[in-house]
Length: 393
Ligand code: DNO
Image (cartoon, rainbow, N blue to C red):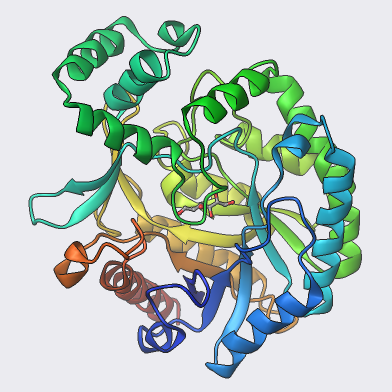
């Protein structure tokens, strides 16, 4: 597998040299300075690529070219934004960047309630806690119909939790949920998230899925011509938030997209942590089913709790069968051995890591994107890959 690393560009606290020192060879990055919906200019793409190549690394995957909300809703200026997206894809392909990750989550990108959940060994992990999320939705946002989104038990616990929270804790919870996490699609304040939720709540799951398929029908032919593959990232977490639709959470969801637009340019990101947060997703079976349409992999682990809550555990210690997952991916790579160079290896990144050591007190470190935590994850995963590869000889 190709070992990659997410780099947030020249402002990242982790430098390209440090990424090389960690042993990764591929970079996963995006032009986060371009507003969502605007065209990625050739000059900016080339400048980013040059920085990466000057450090003896390769720009393997774009994560993400984000979609404007108008495209997700097919309202407002969506036609202009789709044309812009098509142009960005052409520009990336022309510059030699051939893999694009994106997502179709409504309103909020990946979401957690606690960004410094301390594990017994004192590292900090990311956590999604249903009671906290419901407390925010019910009592801070006061969303219409929020109560119907949760079981009576969760509502009772959320009420108790919220009443016991200090004003500072309530503010921190709100910030964690709506201010936007690294690489996510921007941030909201209370009024703007209310209005975004209100707009998206007009759409049911089937309309939302149809909007995604319509987008794919417009983008995939362009991607084919530009020699780019698109790899949709699953919903994180993989269930409805704020009562909104979710269409990339399960094997059925992924299958529906691949069947609707059967081009090889229409593919998936296998994010083990996102799909794995649902106990009913069998990741090894999904990899075997969707095998040749998987273009990018996020390897991480989670520990699930009964009510949908989970936290991000050590890469090899959690509910995901990482060894089985890597094994299935290596089988798929073996199938790709006759493909042109650059197409055989599947790019994977250690997705998130704990915050530990000196980085715990460095406020500039992005939650989930510490240097040491990801290096630890990468090193563990590299060991798994090497051992499984050796056993195949
Ligand atoms: C979180 C990431 C997400 C992901 C986007 C993909 O760590 O997995 O930011 O990049 O949702 O579009």
